[in-house]
Length: 189
Image (cartoon, rainbow, N blue to C red):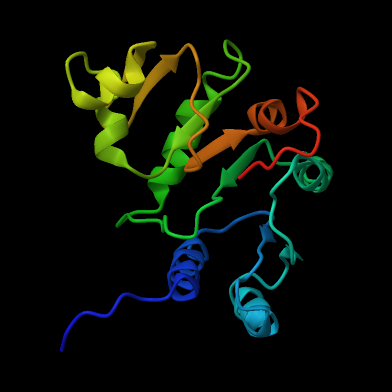
């Protein structure tokens, strides 16, 4: 049988199912489907994974929509946000405790640094972003320096930051990205 490319919706469902394996304190899901006829069915699927989720049937695509998310997030007593704006970055690990280990390391930097995040995908790229001479360093990492390295994590400072949509970010960084300047009606995705 030839491999058939799954639909974007099936890929999103797969990613969400992988996220459901972790014990989240709160869940906010924003989505917008190309095929509006599947909206109710998709929301039922999301509810089957995250029964207590806040679900908004609109994409965060501008500052106004991000500000709505920020308002919801501020109501919750959580300092970290699993920011997943793409539909194709599932959790890939044999041990979910690595998420807690990386959060512990990230928390240790919040006293010294206002904006802290954890990359949860594209591991080969981000393991090499601070390694001088590697292609990823040449493209994106020349403003990086290693702060700490252990068996599970590499912590680095990136002077100009990184807004890649595959990060666990602290609330300060999320608010900085989407609410620190007036972006007007600009499309933000």
